[in-house]
Image (cartoon, rainbow, N blue to C red):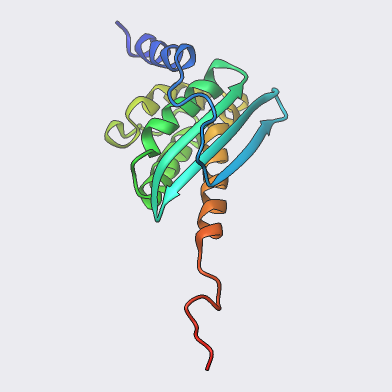
Length: 157
């Protein structure tokens, strides 16, 4: 089997049976992102425990690329520290912006390497990044919500 065919099969598998699909409770933040150029949409919920991603669930409509990339993203970030998830996002972003010239790191991206061919089609890159962008946004909001305010822990005499 050719590598491109294998990658296509990985994308189709995630599209047909998306991981962590369906919005669940509890969650810290919910976001809704839309790709206006093609109409893809994702609603994503994130739950953190300190700096660890404990849950990411989603409902999405759109092309196979956007839905599969969101499914892969959930696998790559759940159970990991936020910093590691963000580093994985950066690797995926680098792959998508490389226009097919970046060699994907399979140890970091796992099934995400299947999107290497997508990077050659600029119009589809936004599709692949939609779920990742939603996750980054939701995670930043969740971290901001849980950050101590400047008066927490201060006692007044």
